Length: 290
Image 1 (cartoon, one colour):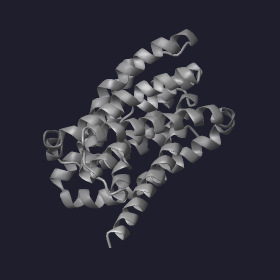
Image 2 (image 1 turned 120 degrees about the vertical axis):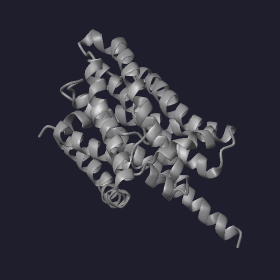
Image 3 (image 1 turned 60 degrees about the horizontal axis):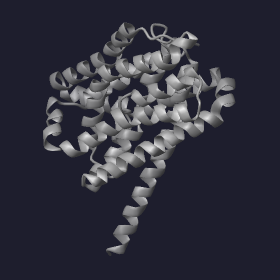
């Protein structure tokens, strides 16, 4: 089974669901809450790719895994980040806005960063990036579904709300199904590299969320905003990274998608631990004030 025929519909549904939860007024939050938005976007769009580049070099990853690691770091926020923000007592509306903004901005940043990365480490071993195909695929799979979702939200708000509830519940099971199928198909390659890549992607998540938490504290974001920033920076759209890596129009490499698969697993583990720690501290604080 070719995973590309699974990941493309999943990615499209996830982006459509994001559009269903958006209204154009949400983007006004950029003016009303500039500090958490600037910190989160800086952490996700600048820090995360830079950290990935540094770790890929330090771990001496092969060109395919090097490019795959940078690719997942370049992707926008994951669609489940608003659920994690809600569980952590964060700012859910801010989370939705950040996911939408990063999804739009990365339409321009991914081609630039990945083109530079591929030229640096890939061309010597025959890996090239058809930038035009990358842009076209992202426009069709990322931008168009979001626009359609926003349009449905305005034209048929009740129907959009019902559809959002259904798709919201399907998002994580669908992604888990994709990861399971991918693991079964590439079990040997994953197991052969899991020690090196597992440590690398875990370091990437931990360093990125630590830096974003520190920056968020330095600019004096509220506790709710800090939690949201940490989750947004740590949670990446693994489905998009897999779609770019495995697409026959772009890299056509399932092996390149392995860092995204491992990142998806580790980001959920790390962020669930983070949410658990936040909730535990909140419970202890409530008991102390009684």
